Amino acid sequence: EPADPQDRDPRQLATRLPFLALGGSAPPHAVLQQVAHLLRASPSSSSHRFVNQLFGGRENLAVAAEVLATIRNNSMYTFKAAGAQVLVERELIAHMGRKVGFERAEGSFCPGGSMANLLALLLARNAHFPDAREHGCRGELVAIYTSKEGHYSIQKAAGILGLGRSSVRTIPVDDRGRMRADRLRRCIAEDQEQGIRPVLVNATAGTTVRGAFDPLRDLAAVATAAGAWFHVDGALGATAVLSPSTRQLVDGLELADSISWNPHKMMGVPLQCSLLLVSRPSALAQSLDETADYLFQTDDASNDPGRRSIQCGRRNDALKLWAAWRRLGDEGFSARVDRQFALARFAASAIAADPSFVLIEEPSSINVCFRVRGVDPAALCEVLHRSGRLSIGHGLVGTQRALRLVCVNPEIGEPELRAILDEILQAATGLCERVADRS
Ligand SMILES: *Cc1c(COP(=O)(O)O)cnc(C)c1O
Image (cartoon, rainbow, N blue to C red; front, side, top):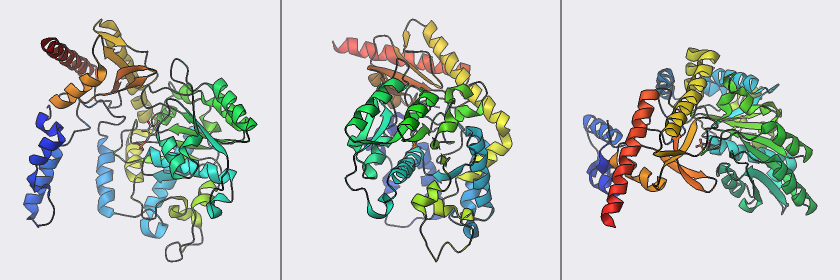
């Protein structure tokens, strides 16, 4: 059911929630009513009209496991504190490591893909400058490479780690949004001529707007020849490794030094669930282990994930993923990926068949980029958002602004996709009429 339009305006919404202010106390039933009220006034990410984020829908067993994990409330730093949950994490890291083709994977569950990317940059920095952890970076000339359509968390991480946002080179993409290996090679060569050290190449498996997959094998060859750490940001698309029919999109994944992977996107488990997988043994501990006598009291460090994480106290993000995997099996996840890709192909063909729409390109994966002929996508998204009828986003495909429909929720089937497209056309008609009235 459509959300209340008044809830879509932050100022109006605030006046409708007078009980927000903290200070006094309230009886439990009143608090629960207020919580329910707050939830009703928040977007529902499992609604069949929610297609604007790279997550959506609900995998019931994962939700149940999440709630139960919260009730147990373990902290994941040591075996003593988390018991069997440490083994659950270890099994996931081993299983996902085998899926990506690492001989011996290490890994760390992170609070999101941005944090996983940050951790990858840290490992790359310390691999290049073993002194940096102890003494900091001392005016080193470094460069990091990502594509023009890569995720902004790479720039953010470079800023946080003292490598500098200006060290990030954004490499041009081809007409399908994939990083160009030839341009990467040229950019690295130019840097090297000036004595600048290539520290990390970030390839994206599933770009945020277009869902494009960079050519991993080619980029790995360039990175390796330059001595750079090869990271794959697979926050969105590493999941493609789970289906035989999409596996070739991540061909060469096993060549990565590290991979970010967000099960909270295509695998449908609740936020947050994200990992960094690392193929270089001990790299995580080399960058993160601290002696904390009061905490780490076992001889075998492998039992204490806290030696390989940025956080100290860390919530249990593993159990929900394990529960979903146990339920679906490898085959269930493979089928889920196939369905997401099939839904995107369906939406694209429905769009291509309707002359009111312009399909910007055939989808590379689960994101469909298009627009309504003659209508500004940003204005259209805003109208849809305000009406509470549909949550859809927009982004730039090259220089063109486009609506981005994300087919991540397998429950949004073909009839719902048709209804979404109708909703968009209705809103576009309304928008054109209003513009015509004004002029
Ligand atoms: C979503 C995304 C991220 C960021 O992940 P968060 O969990 O939102 O921090 C990074 N890279 C890519 C390609 C993404 O799609």
